[in-house]
Length: 315
Image 1 (cartoon, rainbow, N blue to C red):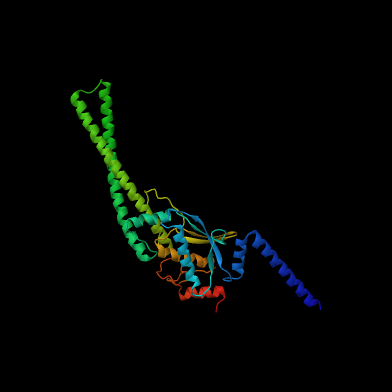
Image 2 (cartoon, one colour):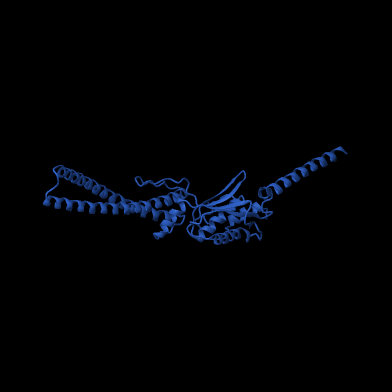
């Protein structure tokens, strides 16, 4: 009779522990409790999510962003007929942030130049060719500008010395004054040309830096060599990821940094939502859970579906 008693006692303790967890997580922090349950029982209830940081410099409204999130949800929900995610205004277990930095800024600048980028080898090769040509043009123009600046500085120094000499004598006679005035006008005109060329080259450098940023993002994804363009003031910005899923203690969030268009955004969101479901990467290049966002399909591949069914315990 004692053995069943010990079982009853163990069960009672388990009930008390679960009850305590329900009290703590359910009443103190319902978001953590929902996240806790989703880990214990995957797909048993929808993961609630809210919008956190939403940078308005992206060319998308918050309403459209939420619609795209709904589309990304459905990528996972329709194939198995379950609601896996639910949007709430605030307090969701998952926070989704839209963060604008050099990654998106570089993409936008290239789009304005008519350069559309996809995460594939063809885009990398095409952009690398444009970069190589443009950087050669920059170096030629920069060398010519440096020569012009050196010539200008030499002429300016001689002009100033001659003006100082005539001033020491009490002033230049009319013919010399007229000549010096013409030299001054010529120097001012040359200075304006130098300034205009410096401004133009700065814009070119800005374009080259944008190309470098995108090339390095693609290079990291495609295991290519990182591009180095010295002398342009390029400042590194760290990892060039389009987005990321972060799970660390109380942090449970998706950060979106860059997207080319609506299709790539929805695929990116679907990919990161997959990670929120605790799904890993797969090797199928067309899969939503492939490590690169280079596919065109908006539906799960067999590999994606197998992952999802396994995670949700669906046979």
